Each structure stands twice: as structure tokens, then as C-alpha cells.
Amino acid sequence: MSTPTIAEVMATPEFHQNPYPLYARLRDEQPLYRSPHGVSYVSRYADVDKALRDPRLSNDRDRITRAMAAQQGDNQLMTRLMKKLGRVMTNTDPPDHARLRKLVNKAFSAGRTRDFRPQIQAITDRLLDAAEAAGRRMDLITALAYPLTSSVICALVGVPGDGQARVLTWLRQLENPVDAGLTIEGTEQVVDDLHGYLYDLIHRRRAEPTDDVLSALVNVEEGGDRLGDDEIVSACFVLIGSGYETTMNLIANSVLMLLRHAEQLQLLREKPELLLPAIEEVLRYESPSLQVIRVVAEPLEIAGCALEEGTMLSLLLGAANHDPLRFPDAERFDITRADTRHVSFGSGIHFCLGAPLARLEAAVAVGTLLRRFPDLRLDAEPVAWRPNPSLRGLSRLSVHC
Image (cartoon, rainbow, N blue to C red; front, side, top):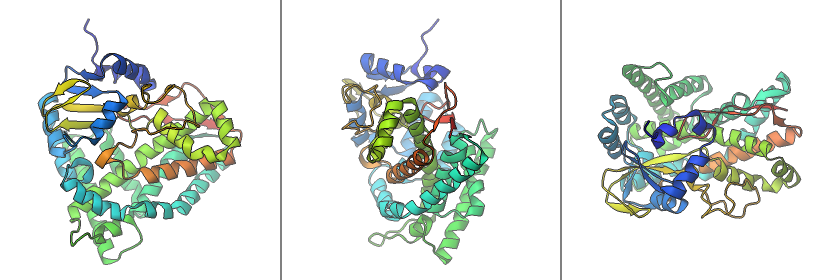
């Protein structure tokens, strides 16, 4: 019987429940593992961090599509969807990336995120009021993490309340078209419906600007350069799609880690000033993003191995964040850890634009939850992790308040 490949192991329930033993084996035995299917996995912190910053590794949509077709066979759905989704800063290389990032960053600024804190707090309070009224037990995902993060990013971008449910339904269908029962044509129709809705919003904001990111994207200008409508739609798609998923996971993962480590939770209750360091330690210890894809654009060497142009790389963020060569006692969850310079938000030019918002939402949600419910505890173990090798998130987190 043949030994299962890394990709096959990553599809098992055991991996979804605990990916870190596999990551440790890769770091120790094959820091660059060449899969029979053509993907090479990078697991050590030094290599992952360097790769994230290396301009010879591409995040370009067309390169990734070609590499996937060459190594995994032509995927009609992926190819057609990538073209429909357009070119945004998350799937471009310089110089296009620099132009798009500069314009989008002016609209989706850290200052705008900070100004949104009162609304984040108000939404959190409303959701916890409802959860408390419904009883002393709740699923943290459906009661707090998902409605908070989805409401916040939709409101921040500028999706009106009566359209948020539709937009989020479309996005969740696109996360996994097969599970949603969509054909290739059906999936393309969902993209068309979402794009049509966003184009309509652009025209409305152009006629009547409001104080939201969409209006800012419509009007942002740098040296006479502006975003086209297609670029605005693609930017909104990425901001909304990525703006709730990882933050939802961060909130739930934070609560789970604190409830599993009673001494750390008690320390945080005694020293509330450790809340932000605690969030950073969760980002390191139980990263919401486990891997990102890059393609070799120019021959280079990683972990002592020569890589040819066109090679597809999986940079294992979750493995890098547990590397004992970078983080002493890496398997210990410690909210007082002095150095938590993780790679959960990436590094280099593709560092996550939404990182300030994710950190803010997690701090507000977790801080408020702990203040309001001093007897908060887990309802059941083991918890169920979602079967996704790229994201680390719970399907449910039942707690007693």
C-alpha cells in the first residue's frame, strides 16, 4: 500500500483536528517537501518568511492558473472564475500590485478602521444581549463571530443592510461551489449576480457618495490615477470575502484557546492589558490562515533545494508559526510571550490589508465577552474544526455563559 501524500493527509479528519504533528514532521525531515502532484510545501519559519518577501515568487492570477493547469490538469471552473473575478492587488505582482495597493489602501485605511470601533462595540453588545436573553448556552460562531464580522465588513465597505444577506450568501456559495450544489455555469451565475449587485452600488455611490469604503474607492485618486469599475468590484469582492472569514476564525480560536488554558485566561482577567498580546499569541498559535500559494517566477533556492520557474509552492504559515527554531517552547500557548512576530497575515508587499480591522474586531469581541461573562466555559470537547487545509476555523463552538 502506497504512502499517502501530504495533500491526502491534509484531507483527513485527523489533520483537520490537529495539523501540528504533520507540520513538525515536515520541518524536521523535509522542510521543502516535493509532492508527487507538483506542489512543493515550505514549512520552516525562516524559509516561509523569506519566501513571502521574495519578488521571484509570484502571486499573479494568470501564473497561478497556468501552474495549476500544468500540475493538476485543466480546471475549467477555476480558470473561468479567476478571469471573472478580475485582477486585484491580492493576485497581481509589481508594478500592477503597487498601483492597486496604493489606491485601495487610501480608501481602506487604518484610520477608517479605528473610527469604526464604536460601531463594532455596538454590534458586539447587541449580539451578546440577544445571546444572553436566549439562555446561558450559545454557539459562539452563529451567535457572535459570524454575525459580527460579516456585519462589520459589509457596513464598512458600504453594503446596505437589505443587501448584506444576499452578498454573504453568494460569497459562501463561492467558497465551496461543490458543497453548494453548483455546476460550472451555476457558479459563474453567482459571480455574475454578485458583480451585478456591486456595479449597481458603484453607480449609486458615484451619484450619492456616503461615508464608506465603496464611496472612497469610487473617488480615490493618486497622481491623476483612479480605479476602474472592474477594479472597484474586484476590490470589494476581496475585502468582503476575506474580511469576515479569517476574523470570524480568529475570534472563535481566541475564545477556545483561552478556555482551554485556564491559567492564561485567569492571567488575562487579572491583567486586562494583556488582551492585545493574547490576540497576537492566538494568531501565532492557532492561525486562522494555514497556507498561501505562490508560483516560482524566476529560478531560486529554498531550504537548499533548487526550484524551477512554474513550480507551485504552498507556504505553510501554521507550520512556520510553530517552528521552535523561531519561537522557543513553540507548542506552549503563552499570552506573555515577548516575541509573537508570526506570519499569519503574510509578509512583504502582500501583507494583509485587513490586519488592523481583524485585530480590532477580535479585541472588542473577546474583551467584551470576558467582561460580561466571568463564568464562561466550554460546553463540550473535542470541538469540530472545519475541513479546510488552508484555513483554521471551527464549525461550532458551544459555550456556557
